[in-house]
Amino acid sequence: MATEGPEDWQRGGFGLYVHWPFCEAKCPYCDFNSHVVSQVDQARWARALASEVRCAGEQTQGRVLSSIFFGGGTPSLMAPETVAAVIEAARDSWTFANDIEVTLEANPRSVEAGRFVGYARAGVNRVSLGVQSLRGADLRRLGRLHDVDEARKALSVARDCFDRVSFDLIYARQDQSLQDWREELEEALELAVDHLSLYQLTVEEGTAFWNRARAGGLRGLPGEDLAADMYELTQEICSAAGYDAYEVSNHARPGAQSRHNLVYWRYGDWVGVGPGAHGRISQGPVREATVAWRMPGAWIAQAEAGSGMESREILSAEDQASEYLMMGLRLSEGLYLDRLHALDPAIAPESKIAELSALGLIESRDGVLRTTGAGRLVLNSVIAALLP
Image 1 (cartoon, helix red, strand yellow):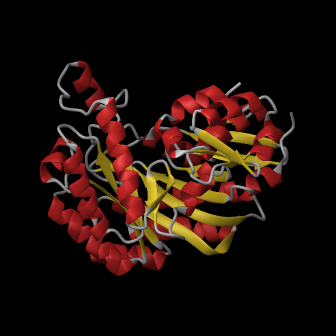
Image 2: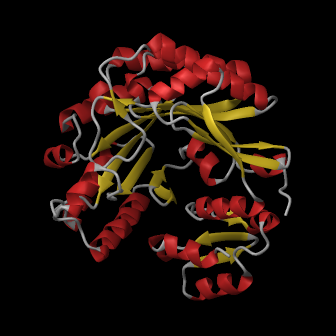
């Protein structure tokens, strides 16, 4: 069935994702496209990234850009001049929303005041710090190079330079009890500014943790019941502190939600530039999934030759509906059934909605389908039940 064209993506917004693939070290739990190198030619990478942004701008003229997100890797290893070049290219390519959000991910170890001032001058107005734990022993287990004092100092510098600050924590770690997590989360909320991303530790294939687990060396991880208790405790404590869960793993004060991530979860369009970056771009009734070359050397060579994009795939309406379902049900606000069924009438049939509603896992009201708290605990199963 034909899609709604531009009107469909506009219901989710338009953003730009910029991937900086370089890190000081590879964390054992990380399955992102990150690479450890001794030196980076910042000027060369600035030119290549800016060129890719301008190429994308030529294909998406007339749009209003609501967000830019520098992810990685470790974007706080970027020179402020590199960040500025990318933001300037975006400004040349699209009209900026009056309240555009420009986020940069930062590692506490690479935070220093002068660099953050440079990012702010370049146009960054929000930072997201990869703190991951407020316990020294767990930071070492997670392979992080910073310590707790460095994390606290980084948060202090970030608060001085930016009005909007988020940081990440990983829980359900080795040998962590429910009380341990309660104490750490309450400590984190005392440090928080307006947003927290709280993720359960997952062991992904291809990571050092995966290999360690297969060899029997990753002991002390919580069972399913304890992990579920930790999730429910997270919702309870954050909500009481004024940080409601607007998405499965993300908590914010009112108005402080990550606008860029909302573009993904509301299934808008976004341009992805940099090694391994993914994008979703609509051109009239056609929506494409784009993927950039993954390896940094291959990407920059291709970008300098004309395009760092490795593939562009036209998504069927059914594939779009599946993606919208998987994204939208992560949000506490849910998704619009008319939009979903315009893409694929067979997805989320009334009989399945009624069945899952009776189980207390979802609710459908005024044309909006959303998961309940119980449903978010078993979100993958809920999604599987609603797919054709």
